[in-house]
Image: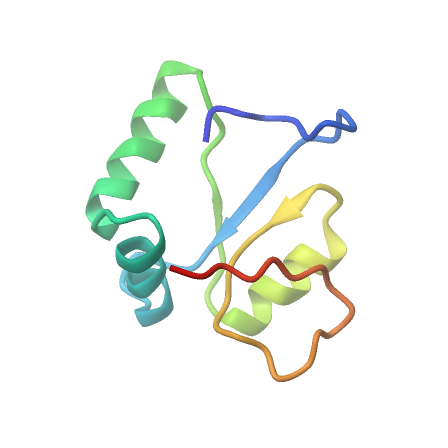
Amino acid sequence: MRQVRWANDKAIVVFVLPSQHSVHKIFSKDMLHIFPYQLDRIWKKLTFSGLGVSPRIVKSQAELIIAVRTTPGAIGYVEALDKEEHINVIKVTK
């Protein structure tokens, strides 16, 4: 969250689903081990203090995939994909 650039010096652009989205809730709880409201507070604190850049919120998983595919340095999360859709996938396991 505090890292704003990749190793190749490209800006990191984070895309997330709305806090109320079921996939966002699962990601927050199962992968980050915090509640969505806690994640929101962390983002806001980092953004307002100037230590980080807030994520870009998209409405759907399809929109998130398009945003990550077309934005240099982007990262995001979706449910498991049936096909890779020409994007880099990092599989996260518990």
